[in-house]
Length: 265
Ligand code: SF4
Image (cartoon, rainbow, N blue to C red; front, side, top):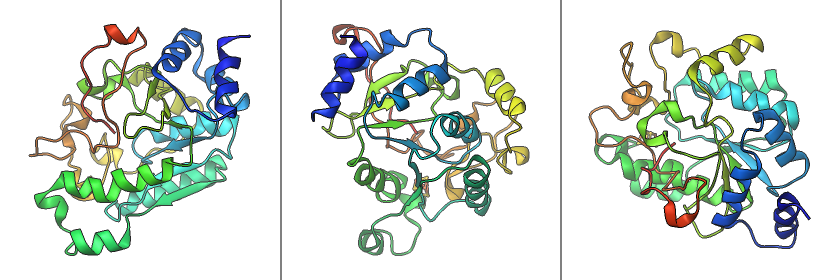
């Protein structure tokens, strides 16, 4: 029996993933092509029920295209915070249509909590962590309860907080033992650009206007050439990530893990 079979069989019988499983998966797919890895994971249901978490941001088309080629029915979770640029919402609809994605799920904040804690809609201006908690962290946590694994579009080059992330890690936002898969973690900006060109994927309309990393409109600023692409997020705040990702691990034994990573999105 292979590692892959053992992991898949255990998901089928109930429990989710352990840190040892993430370590094994990192070793199993070390050197494997991204598409090959996704095909194996999705077609053989090695990760059980899987969803993609997408911001429909600057480079989201790459991951969505890769997954759509393997299985367009994989649910796509989008955090509809109510604060997005209209361009992002239009881009989301354009990509869903173009890629033939069959199961877009817009995750909205709890209406009662929103009315109670952000009646003015301006919480982002004085408590961005609290705003992200209401509009992103909680809706995603609730939606992910129904899944064994999530696929993210994070890349190591995006920020120093992501430079050591592995391909597979355990989602530590709760105690469900959910797997987090980062298929693009080792992709370079050049490879992303080449993939976009090869498949003629449409760009997010705001990239050409100077936004290399795009989130909610009140918390996204233009970035000067040469700056960290994510430096335009929450400008002026000591905040670089929204909190839907928390400390992870690399693919070595747990006793050799590096210190926890900053929360990332
Ligand atoms: S990114 Fe800004 S507007 Fe969006 S949820 Fe976080 S604080 Fe609120």
